[in-house]
Image: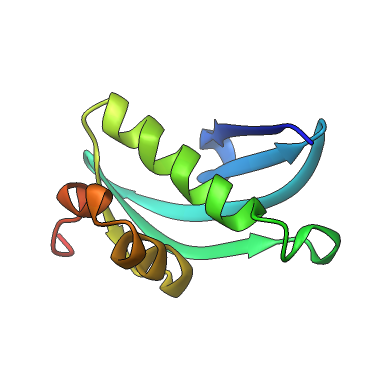
Length: 95
């Protein structure tokens, strides 16, 4: 099983493809250099397979690489960051 996380700026979200099929997304609202994440969704056939964690990790890695920051209003993303404190430096208070 292969995962690919890509940003879809037109839809304001990062999407995860599993074996080239769209399996989920995490949606954001841009606030300058900060992205406010509001919702994460993984399609039912892909739940319980680590797809959500791979989506959030790939998203945060891309944001870090471009020097961005996040506000994790989405409970799934907030919980991921809490479990993986190496990403805590990306979090800022809501603008």
